[in-house]
Length: 298
Image (tube, rainbow, N blue to C red; front, side, top):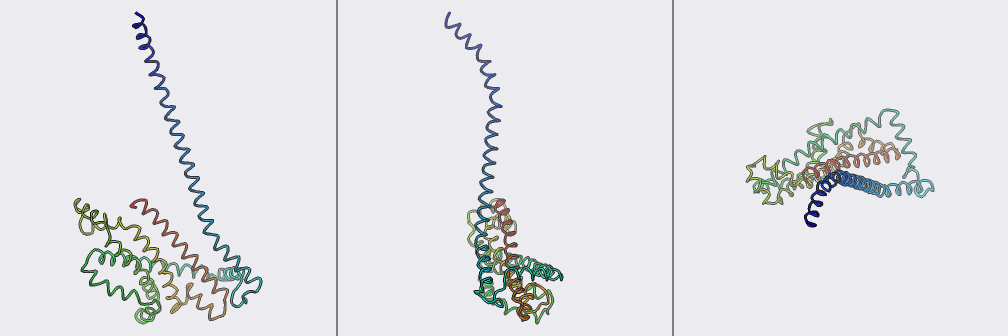
């Protein structure tokens, strides 16, 4: 009898216990969700602090250079006709800006670089894919392309001026030549080392030719492609200066040579600083593209 009464009491408590557990489940879920939200916020805060620390660390050297520059010009360590003060660069920038030349020169040079870079990147990607995927093309094209890559930028300029004149075409083509080779080199080298098992798996799914390249092989070499693009962009700015030094009446390269001829050391340094800023800005934009591509295909 005592055992039966205990069993009936236990059975009576089970619905009550089940109800309590069911009522506790939403509270547990809310608690877990709250902890995950807190963890995400903490992770985001840590990530932001790391980014700020990284930016601050990268700014140390430019600040140190600027301070040393200011000290050298203030205390006369280097004559003013050889090293202008940082303030004189600001004055020169304001003067050119008021005359409408500074923005014009920056816009023209940036446009030339972007157009030439885009053309060169496409050419380099196509040639790199052909050479990287075909042993026949590698044997036939790679030696000649390697020889052309060794030609200095200033050696191309007179030839392009002879055939294309002093207009925009010669400058854009010269920049495209400079941008094509880094992309070609990285793409061709990366495609040669794509995992063969990955390629065979793509073929097993029915991918061949261009579809195999765009679906399997190119996503596998995204880091190498982006690295080539960053190198190509740096080359594009180098070849821009060569193009504008030889035959141009506008642009930052023209500002360099004009400042040298007129003895305007302040404008010469200003052009160099602007080229550095623009080069770093465009490189940072490609870096953002790299993060997006790696997030999708990396």
